[in-house]
Length: 286
Image (cartoon, rainbow, N blue to C red; front, side, top):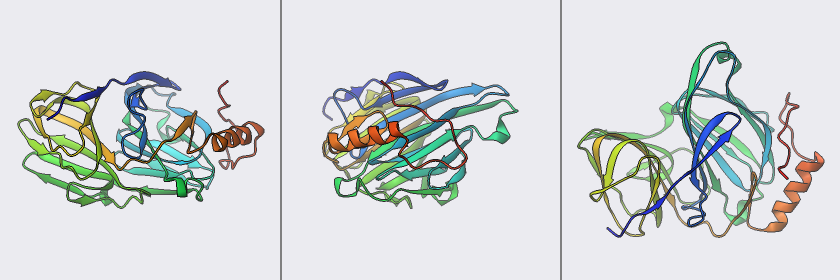
């Protein structure tokens, strides 16, 4: 295999929740349609506290939240009010304009709890970036899985690895959770022109080269490297077809500066769909 290109994530903090963010990076603005990748690190929240991300806007993208541990309450300007549990897919397409809230459920606030998971943003194709917003929730039991020879694959979104997710993606997409037992192997097929692996936990190598923990390894186009588990390991595999150049500004993704400027002006002016029952909001950064 050609030399691995590694993306070292930068550390962030969102309302007290520690994050590692490999995408976007200076060298890779996207992988397939994925323009944003956040690893919400394991975090213990004592009784009386929790994650609380107030009302904020999006355009031109779909957000996907996938938890390994803990619970979140998703609320949005479409009227959705959904409890998200480990293994579920919370899938929101912003299109022209949407606002949402993500927080620890009220029922959990009085107890000690933990949170761990991933949130990604997928840019919409240019022809659909101003589509009507939508939301869907896919319980863990509805996601396709395969489990053989020490390799468990859950297809979170898109198509690949002989599986297809029910999540209604808008462009060719691959998003899978991989769990390998010690000594197991998996060939990463060249089903999509852009692919990357993110090692969440454990020890793994790609064609004999060690993968750094909590870094993203970009797989060269057309190559089919062998993923090997040196011990039990947990990874995310993302990919798809290039989406084309996109601008990102705060929570907005668009193909043009004009759409970004319009969204900023609308949010600042309060001309935006509101999440029912919510008054707190995150203001535009200066």
